[in-house]
Length: 229
Image 1 (cartoon, rainbow, N blue to C red):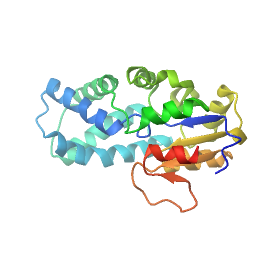
Image 2 (cartoon, rainbow, N blue to C red):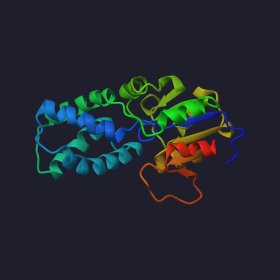
Image 3 (cartoon, helix red, strand yellow):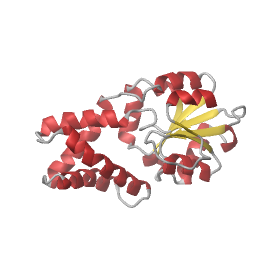
Image 4 (tube, rainbow, N blue to C red):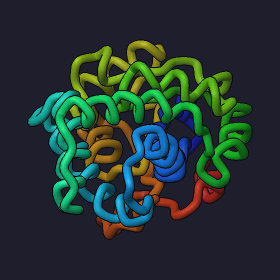
């Protein structure tokens, strides 16, 4: 990878820098105590996590609304666990979960180290599909907000990665061009293919240990990015 012409780096946030799985588990632990949901957290998460990923795929593809995602992923999980709660409680759980997420701010191993390293050489930015009401809070509370010049959020743009509009908007906001920029993210479809669709180079942080095409530049740990940039 030729790094000489790169001046801007765009990062995904959840699962790339911000440890979504760990923070999400802690958020559920908090709200389950509040609402007296009587189920082992590990059992819940083993069912919830694949359902959540499925809903996020539908959300990226504009096939479900934000409300349907928040409600559906919980309702479907409880149904598979033979539990039933009224929709008012599901919605209350969903709302409190979103509010609890930024109260827990563990970062992916090596995240702050790689940000410190890259920030001395490049201008850093965020492109995220996460909900606008919490993404900024995550950056601030986890202590990494100061590393980034801009944050482009799908809620504000009106489309989600991999839609080319969110990448075009991020580049324009940053005053950057595809030729001098690179995208780093964990989601092959949203981050890598989305970036490549507009001619933006990409590095896949293969957080999920997925099988992706061999020609895609990928790292298993964030520290490996130092060898590329």
